[in-house]
Length: 224
Ligand code: NI
Ligand code: MN
Image (cartoon, rainbow, N blue to C red; front, side):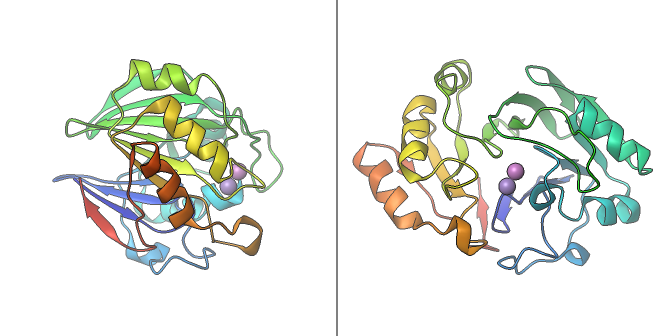
């Protein structure tokens, strides 16, 4: 599969048959070279309802009619806007055509842009083409990440490092120690001045702990 990073928390996963987006914040994302007109997902996974994660969901949803996958309350809100959504919740997993989705806890908030309660924020574990990906969503550090690491063999962990709204670099380094992924990828940094962070500093700390880190440039695609 191919994974493309758009900056912030936005990822595109392409398999032989499917295009999956996570948190498609594109048109208003100042660092993304890719805009909503350039994508055509058949699935969209959302970690929570904040505008920098919901992103262009309504626009893309009305245009391409993908299946949105997220927690119940946010799924109901998407349905109220006429979109196609599958309701899940934290701790539950489900197999879809492209692979398996499981939601995890995340310590953060969640509300839709029009002020509706959007349920609990989440992280998500995906099993696609034999690889396990853990996108932490927006979260502070929590000790149960250890359990997530012990019960899932995480290949790629997408971990926020930008501080202020989420973990900063030092906590993100602890998070990687808890989860023990094969590769850690920093996200949620340098989109805005308030979340400026130096991914090379994170990478150096991770590597001196014996873990590996891949910095994916905004817009760059990796083969996994
Ligand atoms: Ni958020
Ligand atoms: Mn965010």
